[in-house]
Length: 142
Image 1 (tube, rainbow, N blue to C red):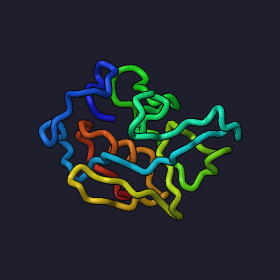
Image 2: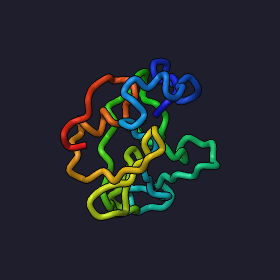
Image 3: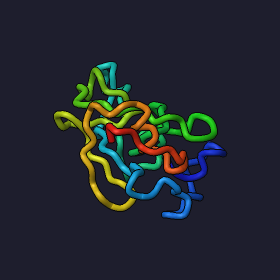
């Protein structure tokens, strides 16, 4: 989630690389998400990720930690860990990134490199990798 989180907005404000003091090679910009994601097994109560739709439920974003994908208050919440291979109808949490790959998830970093992040990453390291302004070094599991 980028923008102006201190005021609860995902719009505007971030400038590469000046507002990323952690460095662009240590920041997750994009991660995989399922096109459709839910936990009720009822297609009427599933969330999706469509880049072209402006409805917040369909935003292809992570780290808002809410199923409706709007910032929950001001600031950066500690980004929830991604899910590895959840069932898209019965186990999928739309507030998280999801990966169909065994053992991890592909992410795009701020320097335009792609990295495969293993499922053994800690919640603390994942949250630090998703926050461009925390100034914290990434853990050994990165």
